[in-house]
Amino acid sequence: MTPPILRPQNPCFSSGPCAKRPGWRLDGLAGAALGRSHRSAAGKARLAELIDRTRAILGIPADYRIGIVPASDTGAFELALWSLLGPRGVDVFTWESFGETWSADIARQLKLTDLRTFDAPYGRLPDLGRAAPDRDIVFTWNGTTSGVRVPNADWIADDRRGLTLCDATSAAFAMDLPWRKLDVATWSWQKALGGEAQHGMVALGPHAVERLQSHTPPWPMPKIFRLVQDAALIEGVFRGETINTPSMLAVEDHLDALKWASRIGGLPALIARSEANLSAIENWVAGSSWAAFLAEDAATRSCTSVCLRVSDSAVPKKLAALLEAEGVAYDIDAYRHAPPGLRIWAGATIETDDLRRLLPWLDWAFGQITAS
Image 1 (cartoon, one colour):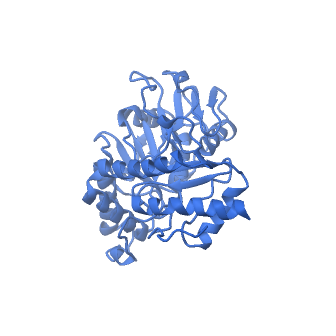
Image 2 (image 1 turned 120 degrees about the horizontal axis):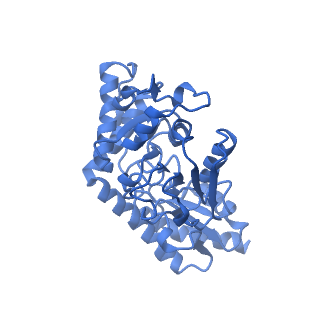
Image 3 (image 1 turned 90 degrees about the horizontal axis):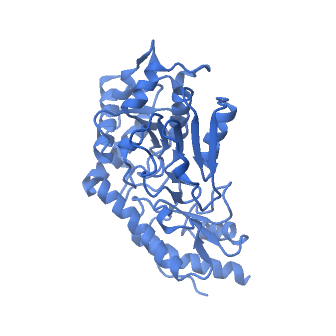
């Protein structure tokens, strides 16, 4: 079987850090405030601009605080767990590795005993209807390691008394998030807009702010998690005064991505690009004899971290290695704790033509491996 003629112009299909935006160039970051303190007027202006542009593109309500916090989405979500949980019972919904991590940390690190975990195997969602409105709810909007997303937020009560804490790192900038249903949401720069791994972001609704100001956690609080001082919110965090030092080069890079997102039409355009990429993969899977979606229900299928099952579980690692050696696709093996398979990032920074060029190479690589 001869290899396809056309190759993706950008072979980067990793699920994090993800591909840079189309047309990205290093010299586009020439205006970075390098060598300057992030607490200087210039540094704080860049960080405040990043927050403002994020709010505008994502449509985050004006009464939500947005902060830049350490350690990517993992740090942002741990900050939320450590800062907010405790006053009420907690319902955790898990269907992939990061949800399992949040559940384990709540039980083993925070040692909360009024904890209910509703889980499902890779490829499925748990019964979201079991969420109780008087309890805090912890969940991931889009399972980066399973390719399964929640289809909507209808299961979250409008008159809830508990908080919703949503890990939205593979959903933000690719899916329309219902902010009034999300009291807390976190994400990172390195996912849907292809930023560099550095800081995470957290959006806090009014009810989350009330919790922060009224609840003192019983456990020691690391400095990088502190959003409150003397029972008052540290407002500077939400104006660009970060808890610890960010890379101003990474800041400039994320600003570049946010400006690109604005130029192409904002969130609707980002969603349309991601959904078009998913559609291209769906068309190919429909005719494949050896690949299928890990997500069993099409309504829950992710349009960013697309996870595929392969008929022969011994094939995926070999296939990913072969395509990397060919310079066709990098980092498309499944997440290390997920079932054997392929994971292809399809977010908005991926060109649909590149995906269309990749798909015949998957067939070619499968044929090469199974014929040997």
